[in-house]
Amino acid sequence: MKAFKKVTTVLTASLLIAALCFGQASSKKSYVFKGKVEGVNAKEGTLKVNNEKVAGWMDPMVMDYKVDDPAVLKTIKTGDQITATVYDGDMALHKVQVAKPAAEAPKK
Image 1 (cartoon, rainbow, N blue to C red):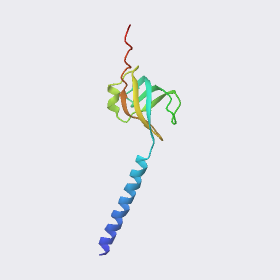
Image 2: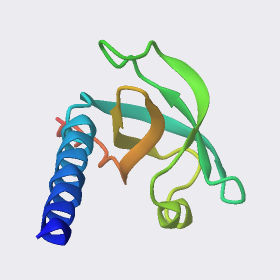
Image 3: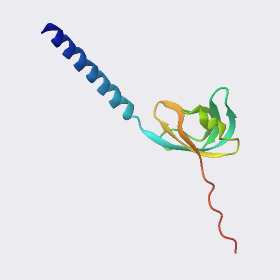
Image 4: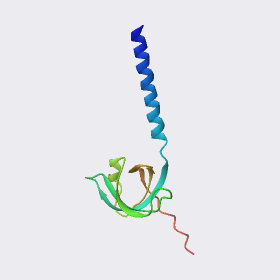
């Protein structure tokens, strides 16, 4: 009976800790990030980006950003316009994608 109580207590505590961690991870505010790639450093796993203002998060600037998926560095090149997701308290770029160029206006 004592062993059952200990196992139940440990299991309950573990579930509580997991729930608290999950709640913190999902509560970070996300923002849409847009910018022009000024450089790719595959060795460091970073992109140098001249980013647009991200309201409520960051003013426009040129900065090196880590990326969440290093594989993206194989497809992105200098000059690409990108979009990504950024989170409060995290300076990495998540879900980086090359932005589709705006459609040209029809010529008259």
